[in-house]
Length: 271
Image: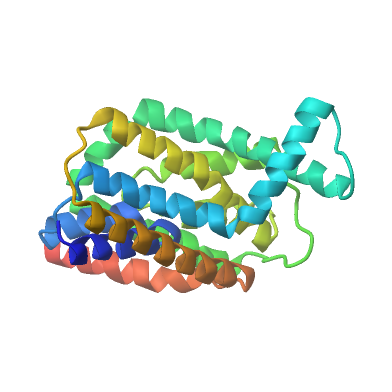
């Protein structure tokens, strides 16, 4: 692959991984309708690592506080020093992410292969894009608390984890589904968006591990590989910034028309 191709793939990965438009759905459409070649395993893995790095950079403050708070509670039994309440809240956030990861992992473990077989059906992807558009569109009618919403807990974390697991279906947006789920359960907008993307960290890590486990790493030029990685990081950071800003303003529904239009166009050209 040349540099242009790897950079283009990095841009697509960075945009669709975080914006509520389904990265897997776009991959299927590009492959089947436009003759878009599936990236080599090494490149695909590096692009996922790029978006993972983007999440970690964007939420670096939260991740640092989560590590500190969890360390103090696990090894010291309580928060220490200044900001004890903040440490306690971030230690709890770590716990809720672990809870939410359980249903995602179980769905991926037991249903991954049957659901991945759906990648061969472009029409199904189009229908799922229509579903995604409906899901994010309905957020327009949610209360949209900007103050203190419901706190995270076992049931909310599990529900969002299940929503993330179902996003294995191509055409269903992970970010759109999880954020909409959190909002519908009464989370404040910022909390719903932040929890959705922090929850994506173990999911992306799991996807990378499965990629390395299930396939043979093909040779890709080092410089094109690096360019694809960097483009996925930079575009991923931009997409995260844009989406979090839209979530805070209650504008997640703005992505619904795109999902509907793409879904209907694909259905039109595949009949």
